[in-house]
Length: 249
Image (tube, rainbow, N blue to C red; front, side):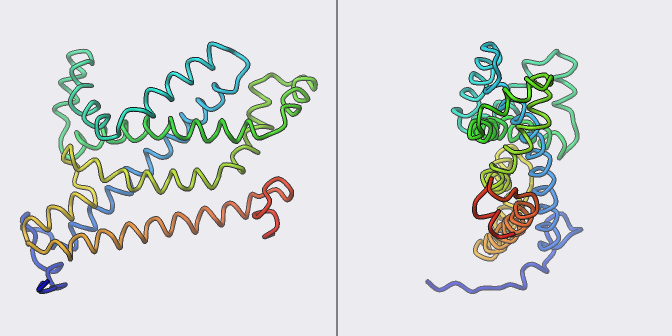
C-alpha cells in the first residue's frame, strides 16, 4: 500500500478557521476527559447504592436493584445513547423537553451522553460492588448490628470500606471502559476525541494520521488510569484481605 504519511497535517488549519487540527484534537481530549470523569463518578455513586440494594435484607430493595441492573445492562450502549438523546426530550414535560432540545452545542449533546454513560455504567458498578460485599463474611453485618449499629451504618462504616478495596481492579477496568465508551457520543454529534479525529480525516483525507493520534491518546489516558489506580490500590490495601496488594506493602 502506497500511502504518503504527513504528520505536518496536524499544524494545518481546521475548517473552523481558528484552530489547527492538533488543537481540535486537544479540545476533543478535553471533552472526552470531562465526559468520562463525570459519568464515572455518577456511575460509582449510583452503582454503590444499587450494589447495597442488591445485598440488603429488604426483598423490595433487592428486586428494584436487580430490575435496574438487568434493564440497563442488557440494552446496547448505542441504543441507550439514541434513547437519551432523541426519546427522553419527548417524554419529559413539554417545557423541559423544549429546553433540553434548545440547549446550545455541545451541551445539548454532552448532557444526554453523561446520562447515558452514567446510568449504563452504574448497572455494571452495581454488580462489582455486590460481588465485593458478598465476598466478605456475613458475620460482620451481624456483629455490627449486635453492637447497636443500624444496617445502613454497618454498610457505611464496616462493609463498604472493605468492599471498595476488593473491587478496585474491576472499578479500574470500568473507568477505562468509560473512557472508551465515550467515543459512542460522536453518534449524537459530540466532538470528543474520536469525533474530532473523524472530522479531521474527513476534511484532510489523512485518516491514518488522525486515528493514529487518537489511538495514542487513548493508550496514554488509560495508562495513566492504570498507574493511578494501582498506586491507590497499594495505598489502601489491608494486609491479609487482598493478597497481592497486601504482600506488595
